Image (tube, rainbow, N blue to C red; front, side):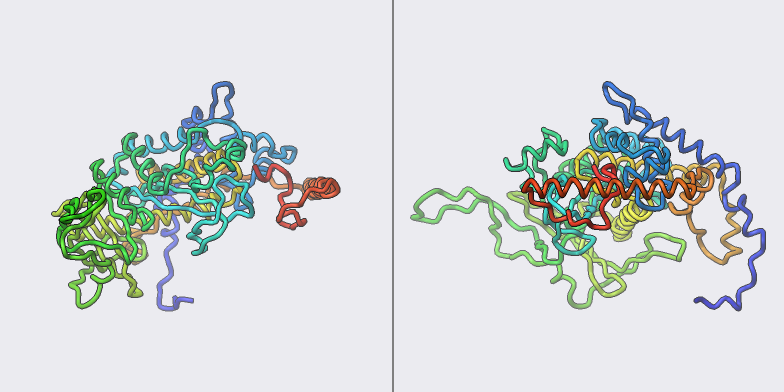
Length: 509
């Protein structure tokens, strides 16, 4: 525990809500702001025959107000009432054909309308969630970044946008491994609502589609950032370059580059050579490519760049750069190679198509912007339950991701509005002896929301009925399994009466 004996006591004036930009009237108005947000997005949740937007309001409240266990049954019981078993909410999330892209498109449009949010960083990253079986859309043995190993999981590609102290998820797509498009999976694809027009796309191809979609919608980003999944994909980088989109993406340490422009062409046929003449372009110059980690040896002229301020002081990067060349097919492209040395001595490598006159400080600032994709994922998962849904169906994954993104955008927009309508007293920083006042977190705004939109508490009698209902559902589930076993059916791996089984069928889609 920090020593506070030499610190003078804080004056009561420091705790004045008005000075912190948190007047009581603004906090009490949070419920109305949430309703207005839902009204703006109302049309996103309608279909050709039905208006299902009321269930979007229910789910949005569940994501924002519940501390955990945000499955369909629990959201319905806590937000709608004990009598609701979540079946209608499940249908809205898993089967209703409202397009999740409408939600993402409107989030991007609202960001575009905020001049203070122009010129930010667009970041690509993946989110993996472990699965117990292969019957969930896209489930396969693949790399799970959260666990750092190959495991059975679903993987989504997400696009986030950050500008200054603002961050939001603005698009997402579920990755479907190549095996999911074979004949054996055709029936399962239909059952799980995978779009009929969907074809296999690599993560780089999905990422490129998300970026192009954001650009077409006018999202005011300056640069695209991404991890090594995208950086090592030369076709992805070349496509962005052809589109005139600036990027900075990480590459693995064994990625190969040239230190001088290589000569590429189709080699001439050797005298007397039989068979077909060469037709595939290749590097003709004698100089070989080198791995980027080979450039990190010796005494480099490292520079320390202050990339931004934060509430804990300053964020600095120790880095170095040089021009390199890469070969993609018959093309030779010149890029910046940025080396970033972390505090523990590890070195990260990034490639950028920034113009030759791009400064080291600019490259460092772009690379540092990837911090906010981590904040986006952390808030979406830790605070808003993005990783809590066990989504079997493709629509359920897309719908859940879109509503989670909307919940995060609602909180970000509240913070943005309050900063303009109720500015903080900047003298607080001097009184608290800090350079920058801490920003409102997602958790802070959720606490205020819970205070003004309290969820009903169960009476002891209602709690007893809920437990009995839970036991009855488990008994019925056991009865169903026993009947299948008696008929000779083989129980699945997770049919062992686990205590983690969902309390109703509405807990899963």
